[in-house]
Image (cartoon, rainbow, N blue to C red; front, side, top):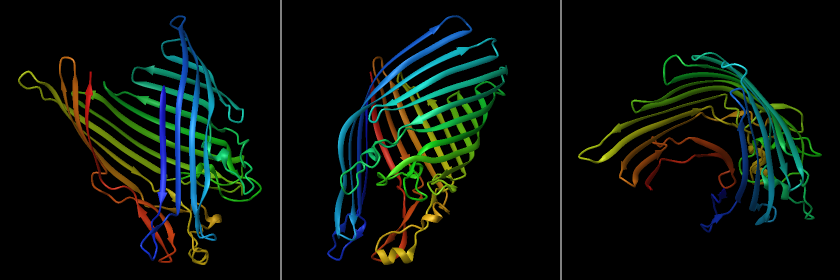
Length: 404
């Protein structure tokens, strides 16, 4: 399997007196992944089943990043790194069903990063009890590892020495309790209580600050890091799902949660993503539109999202004016609650089935109401004010698909 991603941010909003734009920040991250995998499964009998396998990922990357240096009055390239590395995943799972009501899963997962020879061994287990076809309870635990953004391993100091070559794999303990209820056919109600304890998180080394890799969303942090950071996520989620019945389906969910972290200053704070609630509703309807020997169907779907606003760090206006660039109040990190986020997406689809071919014409309208959701704020040195920006407007996507 081969896959690839490319993410880029180009910030050049400031208009200079000569009507040219000053490039403030630019980052490009390109990664391709080639995966070789092998999986073996075997069912001994109705009670015992095992599954084991391994994945080898060959990663190629190209990272560039630069920013405008106010003191030098010029744009400086801070990172330009290409290369390749590999990761290896292995797993084993044993499923045991002593009765038709009880299902027990026990397993382990291993993750190895060959860039700096870091290894994570992760036990996992779950137990499900189905009291009857309508009611089921389950509990699960797992240790999960995640490799930080590869770019942080190639950050260098002014002398060209790597700052974070030995950064470890970030890890988290996951504990989940859930209850499933199916009152009628094709309808499922589910409630889930969860807790995640994150550790080995990248925070600043030899400096007391509120910084944590958990809050990074744009670019690569040019900081010297160690793995002493912590985090925790916990919450309660409710889901109602109607499976496709007479051409109609829907999925609704409500989540109440908290997301917190601890930097090298050892103070617990809300993380950037501590919106406290998230809701979603997805529904669709499909009609048979066959006429005069033409096998056709027409479908409509909607998706409504609503989440609490992300947290932001206040900007120190006085210090920003003095320095001519955005200065944040570090000891008040992520104390500002941004406005809530809402978005409606709609879609329309016309499908026609031929003898050896299926064609689909679709129109997806993202942010159908053209809502200007709040994106964030920054200091504008030309107006000497803190200004805000909005996220993407209405985006129509027209597609035509052929399936042979």
